[in-house]
Amino acid sequence: MNTRVLLLLGCLLTLPVQAQETKRELWVWKDANGVTHYSDRPEPGAKKVEISQPPPQPPPARPATPVKSAGQSSSAATSTVEYQSLEIWQPDNGESFYGADATVNVRMRSEPELAAGDRLLLYLDGKLVEGDPTSLEYNLDALERGVHSLAAVILDASGKEKIRSEPRVFHIKLPTVVAPQAVGPSLKPQPAPRPTPRPNSPK
Image (cartoon, rainbow, N blue to C red; front, side, top):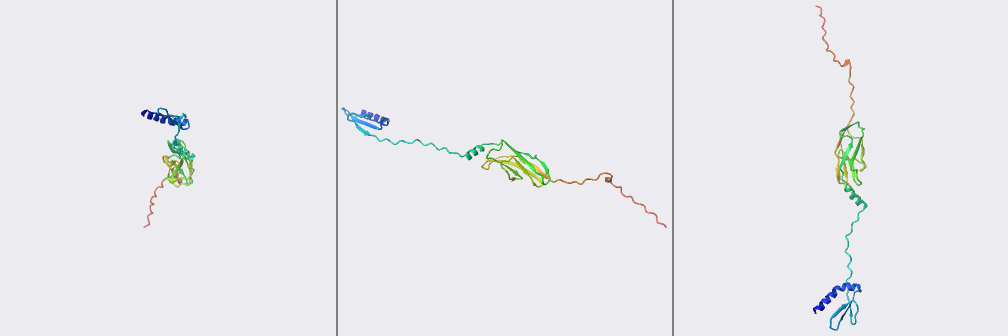
């Protein structure tokens, strides 16, 4: 009995492979000694056994790879740019300009150069100067008399500050007109007048 059970288990273990090769057909019969036999081929007196085949399992789904748009790729590329320096190299620090109609030419530079997607902004006395956010030059005019300060800032596409320059100071002064001083003998002090004696009156 134990031998029959072992044979049956062995046949069942090899059943999926054999059934797949023979389109899932199995034949069973008993010999003269009453021993049950299994085969993938029909034998005299054998009976066909139907075997239900489980449906094939789909392959495991792979996680979808997010597709980045061109704008996202560009932003990711520019966000990695790190600036080593940003400076205002014109005008000179402490430079003076004369006249209410004076024009101040401002020039800036960064290392490395301004990357695509980043913005370069200029502030005059803490107020934003309107202009092209990629320009390295500005012309300032109609400035009031006094001391003015400049500062440059680079922002990324999301508005986050990446680097700020050192402040640059300049002066707007009005021209002064000094009257010429007199020269020559007229500058010598005049002697003090002496008293004139009065004539004696007749007695």
